[in-house]
Length: 351
Ligand code: SF4
Ligand code: SF4
Ligand code: SF4
Image (cartoon, rainbow, N blue to C red; front, side):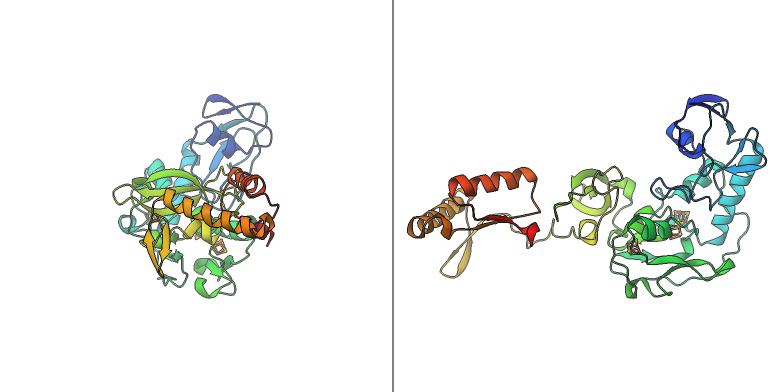
């Protein structure tokens, strides 16, 4: 269908909200509670617009497009309301951007920049909220939380771990874990979905702090090496040290939709670990020595051949891995069936 946004006619699809249609056409409307994965929230009210034929301001994240709709997101009335919302968000927290890990990748900062807000006009961040550093992987700073509710929706509705909710009320509203436990003492499984979806610096991956902001790092697409689900990853790599600083789930990952488990998101220290094996080792007289691949493969072939010759092919069995690709598993079973001449081949995913 055709709609008009700020005087420009553009395409929109049945089932889209005004905000989705605007964003798909490259028109930015400030928004903080909305995320494509958690849907229309209608909570933060930063995305208000005027729509011809509708009274007052409308939250563009919750109004569906209609053929011929005329939307104005940049009238003085709409901009004034958007500014007030962002101004209040900045006012109610402690937003010291220079020291914030999210600086340059913060959706509140983007909205403030778009609306020309240099500093909050009212300062009433009178609640000093204690940092929660009890979790192994997520750093919680409620002073930067804007109560957008994305983490609540993600933890409960997307990954369905049901740990986070809003607690306290009114001016004291804040996110809580279970019955207001420390994150590290709660039933949180450290999947990091809340950290990935938080638009500001309130939930941050702990191990990445101080190692470079996301926009300073190279983004490399990869696939998680841990299990057969094959979650798509975005690795953020510091080229100067050649180290992975952070991992996010790729939002376009066909099997994971941006989600990861604790292993895929935070278990990457093995990649650059000094104990990691990079060359084959052969044990001689109780001691390992480094060997070439040819030497190691020749040794393994000779040992297996001797066993097969002495005891027959069915004296050998082989167990394959969920951590390798389908193609590698196919090749492996082929090797065992045709090379080793036994059907004793299985896969660790059947444990
Ligand atoms: S959360 Fe955003 S606005 Fe707040 S201090 Fe961090 S970068 Fe600045
Ligand atoms: S890390 Fe995962 S389980 Fe824990 S609070 Fe965040 S979304 Fe919920
Ligand atoms: S912690 Fe982040 S995602 Fe959760 S409510 Fe606060 S700002 Fe929103």
